[in-house]
Length: 424
Image 1 (tube, helix red, strand yellow):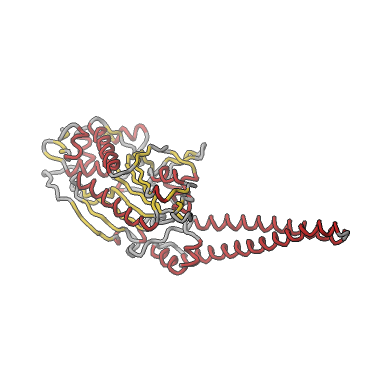
Image 2 (cartoon, one colour):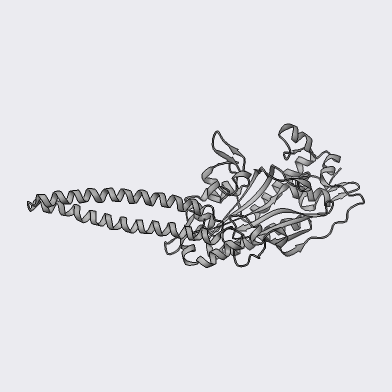
């Protein structure tokens, strides 16, 4: 959530940033925020004056009674009672205004950094780096959904029977490949200094609002109506919310957490070739990185996270590219975001496998996640997260790019986890 200070001190820059994100009526929304804030400040000023007058009058009553000026004392009592009524009215007005102001701020996205390119769709994203090597495929190379059937790795029809489309069942070597990737990603994260967390996979509404999934992505989340709980779309939600309403000592920053969880997304409106096989699922496995940092160090933290994800793809020997997302393709909460994509040789298309984002103070303001600096001053933290990595499209790329006439070759980094160098 944007801070009032950020808006009042940099109104024009905030409006320009929101327009870069293609947020409709950015100027009007910010004007409404300032209007509510002015109403709140005026009510606060009047309340302060009213309480001050009330205090002076209340103090005078005893002295008036002592001096025998009873009529004046009674009049002062009436004035105090009137001021008390007015104080209650002002407090109620301020409460309503603050609630309306907060509700409005929750609908306004984060402001992108200047480095974020202009653009409306994914076609406008900026490719900043490519890596890996082209992998020669045998003639008549198969897409992963056919390879999964050929080697009995994943049963999509069985998933439909049990749950519905988008809930695959992993079998044998397919299940083992999932577990190998999870353990590999977690081991790499721990080696990089991340503390592993095993969080719940359902969260309350406060957690959803804290990281910005609510109210922006409410339609994309599975909601358990009876208990008013949400299945998590990413471990970012429960892990970042560990630090909701927490004041962290500056010496403990940066905080580095990682977590493996199942993730659940309704993916409403998805259709066509993009949803074949593992390309888009309702339930999938993912290892997530979360960092909490101080503002002056968060850019370095972001670069370290990007390097970590790139290192994973290099060890998996996959062709990849890194894109800096344009304003129109960024998430509601991100100030800057880089996507990692791997190339599917069999499908002849790029598959997104990670988004690594810096949220600046946007999530921290919602979460009341703060730190105490060396001068004992309380400041908002910066929050960051990134997939390291999401499994479905990694599995798709591994199956397709490493297929041979003899079976599916396993990258060297995964062989100790798999216990084999090939799936036959």
